[in-house]
Length: 240
Image (cartoon, rainbow, N blue to C red):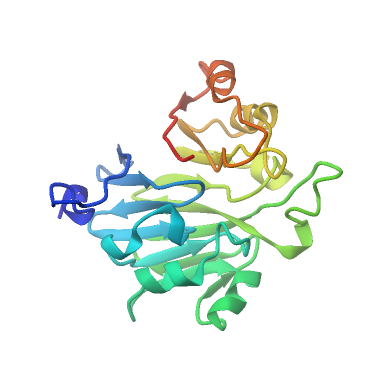
């Protein structure tokens, strides 16, 4: 089944969202579909992984049900139990941080930084610490709450979805990243300069800025692209 069929393209009044299909190291492919803010999905064949689904970011009732749902942390723009319910079937697996796990009555794979899970045979998930490091911003995403970013390995390809974070030692130590999604949303996550620092450190083949906009302080995406020329392929997809 193709991603076009999965997401209803060609059907009357079906929702359409920007999507990229990217080859994996094993000769297969994954398709990333971008909704809004921090909400997206990853299709592996006919299997669908949703990341931080939130009801007002996509028309989830008209999208395919989830095989797997990832939640990075408990803020309202990442954890939405109603969206999770809409996408879930009895066979859906939920992977989330320990604070978000309370919303699911612990009926989930509970992750802490450093945890590794393999809820399905086609994906390995490693939790990466996600937190603020700038004085005056530490309260937004405190380290001791143990929010998570996730490093997915699919078909040998490593996809890093950072969640809400600034550059941390745990992030900057990552290597062999094929695709990275980093938040660039001031003052809560990274500045442009911090995003440049992170991409220069981890050297992904493809970098998607995400989780930007919807705040007063606008992200200078054009400068971000300019400063990373020759470092990574920067792909900007509309997520505002």
